[in-house]
Every structure is written in C-alpha cells, then in structure tokens.
Length: 365
Image (cartoon, rainbow, N blue to C red):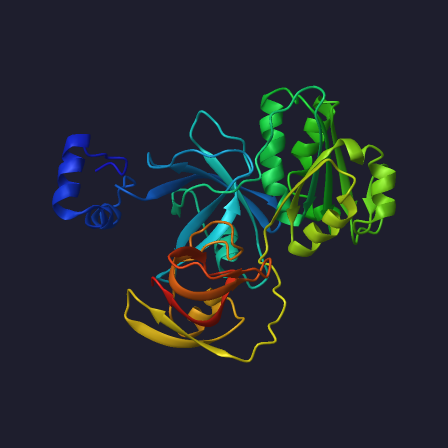
C-alpha cells in the first residue's frame, strides 16, 4: 500500500464529518500514510552535513503545507523516545516550484532535538511542520537597493534564504553579508557563498572570526565594533540592515546601526535573557479548560512556571514569535517580559512564553 495514498476529496470530507479529523489523522499515521486532514507531515528526501555539527534536511511536505517566504521560520515536531518535541527553525532555501523545503540545523550543546536531527534523522523519516511564521521578509529590490545582512553562527539560515532568493532573481541589489563565527570551520554554506560572490559582483561576503589563529586576505576578526563597521561599511548610512543571531549579538549590532542605517530588521534565534524579577509574590493561575488552580512565582515566564508544575502547554520558539503557546487570558494583569509593558485587557491572546503574571489571572488552558 502506497504511503502517498490520498482519499478522494468527497470521501475525505464525508469521513471527516462522521468521525472527525483527529481520528483520521491518527489512523493515517498508524497505517504509515503521509496524507493528513489537518497536519502537515513531511518526509526527509535528502540530507547532508554543512559542517561537522550542522545538517541540512530537505523535506517534502504533504499537500497541507501552504508554502513560505524567504526569511520565515517553521515549528518542527519530532518524536524522541516516545515523546513529541517542537522547536523553531528557519528555512534555509528559497521557495521552489518543486514544493521541497530545506531546514539547516546546528547541534546545540545539550540540545536534545538539535542533536537528534543532526545525528539520527535519516532519509525517509517523517517530520511534522507547523505553519510558516516570521515578519523579517525580503523587501522588493532594484539595482539601486543596498542591503546589509549580519549573521552570527546558525543565524545565517534565514539570510541564506534571502541570498538564494536574490540569486534566483539575478542578484538585483548591492548586498554585503558580514558573517560572524568562531573559526573558519564553523562557516555554514562557505563553499556556496564563495561561489555566489564570485558569480555576482554585487554580492560581497565578509567572514569575521572570533578565534581563528591565522587570517587570510580580506578576512576580519573580533566582535562587532564601531571601528570594524567604519572600516568594512563606509556606506552603512545607505543600507537597510537585516540581522539574525543570538540576542546579545542582535542587541550589539542594533546599537552600532542605530541612527545611521536607514532601516533595521532583526530576529533573534535564541530565547531572550529576561531580567530577573525582584517580585517575591505568588500568583494564582486558574486554568479554565482543565478546571485547575496552580500557584506560580510572579515575574517568571508563564510557560516556564506551568512546566515547573508538570503542565505542558503547546510551545514552539519560546521567544514570543511563533504564537504556538498563545492562549486566551480571561482576566488579570500580565507583564510582557520583552518590553516590560503591562496588559490589563480581558479576553486577550497571551503568548505565555514571554509574559508573566502580576497577581491572579485566568487562562484558557
């Protein structure tokens, strides 16, 4: 029986009405089919190592996948030892008429999911995908457009999607990529970036190393600084800036570009380091759907606080981007830990990974 079998639309709609989509999806999985009524299941059709600890997985999603735009992310769900885990990753390829998508994953120390994806996922394995998300998108460009891409480590992935999209279009912009890594071995996509820079004079690739002992002609070292930017980017005031990397890197380059670059767009790929709360209060959380009340520390991200109680809400990026953890707040006051703003709105949608309780609240969980 083919794993690509798809029920005729009329039959599918009838069965869904009678037994429900979740029931059908469960048995489709049990029988080895890729087709689903609601979920996007993808199959790994190719994989290769980009660096000793970084893999690219090429996936073929089922027909539920809506497509994506260069620069976006997706929640990826895999089962490890019988437990489902979800993490957010960027698409590293440009959108393609083939319908295939590529995700490039760097192994994180003690990262259970990233280690599993790099070391264990094989061709033929299935991976569940969420809906694409993310607002850092490639702008419309002309020959007069000047762009600066700043990447650190695996933050190169959404920017590589940008570069590949621009290459499909013939590189219709003046693009500088400054790529910060520890050593030359850590450069992801190094060979392809070199080939693209040789093919398109309007693309300049500038590696910057933190720990490389010997530099080659044109290479730079050190962390972002005013002196480094002044030397490498004399026309920063003419370039729209796009940044992806750890939160600390993003904040550092934001300070260097502030007041100079005409536009600044950034997305961190690591959870933000929240300022520790000075509150010693305890908040009561009433979970209306499960009819349960728990006590959690004020100032702690609600997602972390609930997980500490053994409650496992759906979650994804843990950075307030993907909205996977969003749930309704029926009453109470919360504080956004990214910008310190208070919310008193009832019946609001709350991203519990980046919000904390200020007193008692009611959540639709």
